[in-house]
Length: 196
Image (cartoon, rainbow, N blue to C red):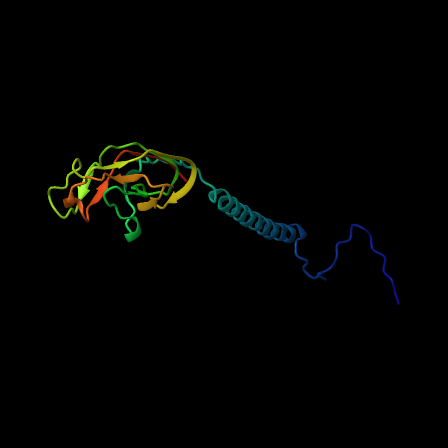
């Protein structure tokens, strides 16, 4: 084997080295590709985070609520005699009364009490056997009755009957005979009711 010494000033002969790609250029291309990938991934993450944030925040909302209070009208009531063969009025006889209560409201009400005022004659007569029977000639009267602390519910737009204790309706001994089969009503009743 023989060695030839060369100096630093000698240039290589025609012998060429294999081409090596320029490292700066390769790194630059790879860096750009990586940068694009990172930017694209970051952009997608920001868009996704914004979408999630939007979905989270858009689920909430604000608005104004309102409600209108309804009005309740008084219940109506009248008093009649109990309609059964055992409680029919005859001259000189007293029978139980029935308080008929109507709830015209769209909600249930509760009757907590009533007062039936003394009446010397009914406010109405219906279905008498003869026209000679009038509120004066019938000689029918009502006694006073009062109750409190009741808890009687009346559904919306409904009717109930309350039968106070005792025989409160009396027909006088000299009642007109044309009053046979008649129904007598009294309006002198006050019913205390409340919503609920």
